[in-house]
Length: 286
Image (cartoon, rainbow, N blue to C red; front, side):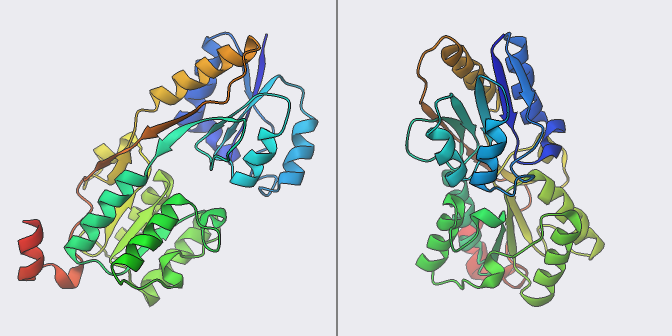
């Protein structure tokens, strides 16, 4: 049986629907798909540690979830097949599948700026923040610069990647900068932020607008409904199964399939508090 190891970004993702669906889809198609015993975070996202770890594992192919560019560049140089899902794809002989949130993010930023937002923050993982920003982060920087809006330390808040660290960063952010809009890249952060803001007596979008660059079915069950980018995850599972079919039969597979995510307005984007009732803003959006 063809053996595939799935290298997660964090071990907790074993319980998440997307990663579990990838494993299930592969298993139902006849492959021995298992999660690796350590995650990228367990290995500190260090290419050398990851390389040593991978070399100790016996399998035929790898799937890497949300891998940084330097890590995926190492995988691209290896003799075994690798499929990158959601990661920062490098150029070279490596297969990849995942959504492109750029158009959805552009549409969100345009809406925020028309509404009058000036202080916009984005919560990104450490490897995606400046000085080496990822694609969404570069898009935010470009949009702010083009519109003459401020870029400060609060644009890309530093945060320890834990619940307590995230809440501490939110506490500091709203005590010092008080952004009028916050962009999150993971549904879990949105849920945690909702709870934090509620406990602080802040309403969405009356006091702060919220957008998530990813999708979670719970967003449509939230009140107010979360603004987000949406894409069909079934295409990712199908692509993973197709990739496995090719590489297990000895066919070279280096295709890169980018899914275009759509902007879903939801109900969590509104005018900034100070601009809510201005005639100029009203004329632009109503």
